[in-house]
Image 1 (cartoon, one colour):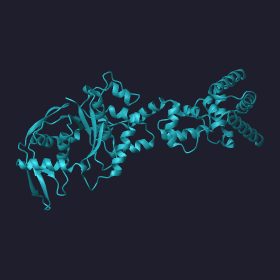
Image 2 (cartoon, rainbow, N blue to C red):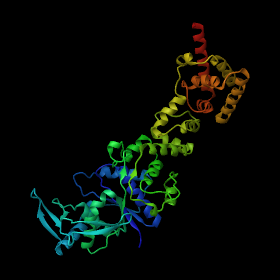
Image 3 (cartoon, rainbow, N blue to C red):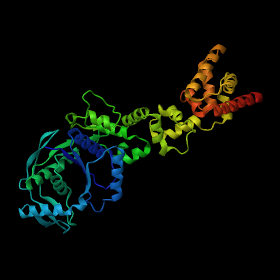
Image 4 (cartoon, helix red, strand yellow):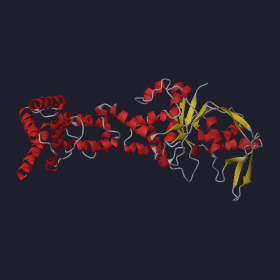
Length: 433
């Protein structure tokens, strides 16, 4: 039997982590089996469905790296299928028209059997009790969710329905509809609930956001995919980090799916994001930082600037702040009072070296710092009393990246100018004292 799965979002809002996990697991399942994944848009809710939501969801799925072999197929364009199925059930005495309490007429399904069971891949045989008659076609002529889903799954020859545990309550009705239509239901795979760190079902109170918000905040798709993949699946060797979707696809095995609840941990996601940022080549990180940068990086020194802040960056949105701390303007007067006694001697030596041997690039900057260390040792100056005043002069800050990265990012001319201004500020302060 060929494997055919579907991801079926409703375009009534943005894509959230739960939906993204469902899409990811359907994608991985299809790729593992060499099968087909279809995107089906369940847009029968006329009042709430919006094409802009559909477009946003598709864009976010693409950003995550998820592609589809078929679709998008829209339920709103498949009315004839539902009408034919409804007529068939009515002809067999399994559907009837009735009015609700508000006097609105709808088509109801009368199950030939109201009790039974269905099989779930992760939970075994699941029994269900009495199922009351339920709506097939609403008063406005649109099919109900359960009816449209079953008709579409049959027409699309879906072999496996992979979705969240919250859909278990729908499955009894759907199983009865499959059987009433003379078909065998697909294999159901109901993934465990996603919980927040407090052990309760994941919701907005846990600070979770739409996928678009994570994207705009500076999360990488690799990090989100990595975290979502571990919500209900485990690697046989306990591996928890995957470079990208391609690596995950190579190592994913559906036999490791679990029905137990899984925790969406924002702290763990942030840690994974930092890990993936550190693993990017500098040119790629610079490209991804592009939408977040408000001003250009130092011309010709862009990659060394990115490398300088890469280890500290957790989110792409932090990049501009870190880069500004590295190369933003410094008020020399503000740092004069924070310098150790060795400050003026250090500045004299650095200025002389920069005048005598201006550096180009990171390696030459490291050679310069090595020479300064040797000089400081000979003068009896501690390493901190060498590097701290130099860092203050260059960045105005007490902490930051390796000092050679600061020098390489600024360039020899700008570094010399900053050291000169700091030296003048120290002398001016001394004369006032």
